[in-house]
Image 1 (tube, rainbow, N blue to C red):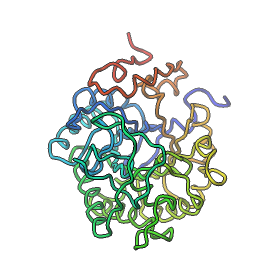
Image 2: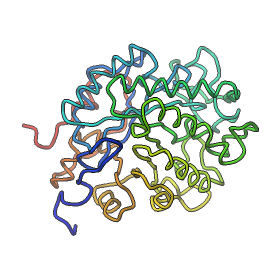
Image 3: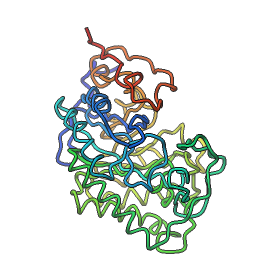
Image 4: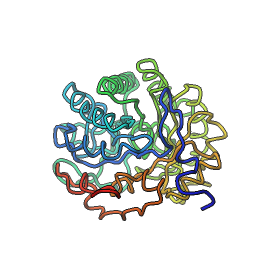
Amino acid sequence: MPEAAGTEPLFTPVAVGDLTLANRIAMAPMTRHRAGPDRMPDALIAEYYAQRARAGLIISEATTISPQANGYVNTPGIYTDEQCAGWRPVTDAVHARGGVIFLQLWHTGRVSHSDFHGGALPVSASAIPIEGRQVRTPRGKKPGETPRALETKELPGIVSDYVRAGVRAIEAGFDGVEVHGANGYLIDQFLQSNSNHRTDDYGGSVANRFRLLREIVAGLAAAVGPRRVAVKLSPNNPSGGMGSPDFRETFTYAARELDAFGLAYLHVVDGEELGKDTPGPPMTLEDFRAVYSGVLMGNGEYDRETASAAVARGAADMIAIGRPFITNPDLAERWKNGWPQAPLSEPASWYTLEQTPAGLTDYPPWNAD
């Protein structure tokens, strides 16, 4: 390594919105299924995030904006007063340890199942199912369903759900919100041409397919301020049946249009390994840097060396890291000081439905007694 441990740009402060982060390492959002059937954060979740507060930024696990948005068992919500109040101890715990935390706002769209909605079908941009998908529902694992296409008159309500959720997040003490526009969920379903066959103002052209995300971001920016709003996109991720022929045009347009909002940051899943099945060369951070002038965050199987290199060459301002933060609550400190990194645990421990410390808060920091 050409520089001494901890001296690279990755470990220098960065301005994100009105905040100055201590380093350029973000903890990526990771679903953990620990919120219980009421989708309520608790003291265990508060401790989990507080343990990882030395990351420059924590992005919470995906959190649903409405009952309709639910599509996974025991994931948290932000659509009731009780859920809002439940998040306050989480943000207080993170702030008490000097951390910064954004809440990721989520609507699963067609990835959901009627078992979550009293028999009503999940919704999407169009009535197009995900081929071969299996869904873990409250009643067990079942085949995916053909979703119901949202009516045009319903879309202002979707926007309002996002805005209300964002306002609740700020009331709960979050430093900002990240709109989950990635990984095949509802916003991605509207963005991409293989899942959006609409003929109204929200389908057809790239501009029309971007319209729902534009309205959500504009609504949140007006309600909480653009510098408290971020967006996540995944141009190279085929999850959820994604991978449109015009993906490069779509995501280049989206990034250029989002740049005009003056957001906190744009979070891009740029992993080229994910892009091996895209219908064209996978998009890189440099592709986004060419059209996005704000804070750009990369995400995609980065390790210490590749994260440091991406920031050093100016391709990204920040790098989001996921799974290594599970077993290394002090990952940023380990990287900065050259301390050994704990190996990943077994995946079965990541997604248990039990509200227990096992696999969540029982990983010690490197310098523990």
